[in-house]
Length: 230
Image (cartoon, rainbow, N blue to C red; front, side, top):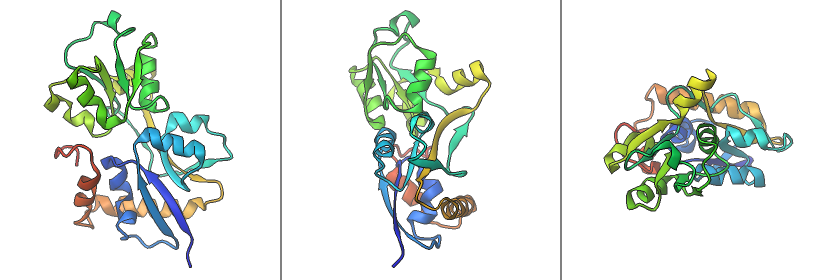
């Protein structure tokens, strides 16, 4: 009987698109995979606990993890320009209010939070929430602003929100570097190369449109169903 590996990824379209071929059983591998879909902060915590054999996590957290726990794969990471977290609100927020205004974030261990701290180190009233609960909290008035990630960055205007700052663009403007969002890591006792080969093949065939059911799979897991997201 082949070995079973647990895989923890987020339900955002980036991850489900990359992993779709494996999750749908369209890529042959010499092992079995059990998939778990959780928000990025839960995945970061899972990495510290060693819960999954393979896990998507924030680069910020990977940098803090003891090296004996996981090794980073050379495929499946999210880096780039113009694709980072956004700071959104219902109305303009004067800079001097950033210190005390309740600001929602998708997790203290996320790269999004690190980018927000880079932008507003003086902010003191920071509140952690699951990423798909942030925009509704701003709309209700529970939060003055929020740092949004994943598919929410494409749909915030539909909720009547405005972008106060593109935190990824701010990072790049200040440092000249791409935005280090997240990567895929495997436990030290898990063979890395087979996963890299399988994930690379899954991504390549996904881009080629080999599987008609992939778009439905991505949509089924997405928290926001706007066409731009999918």
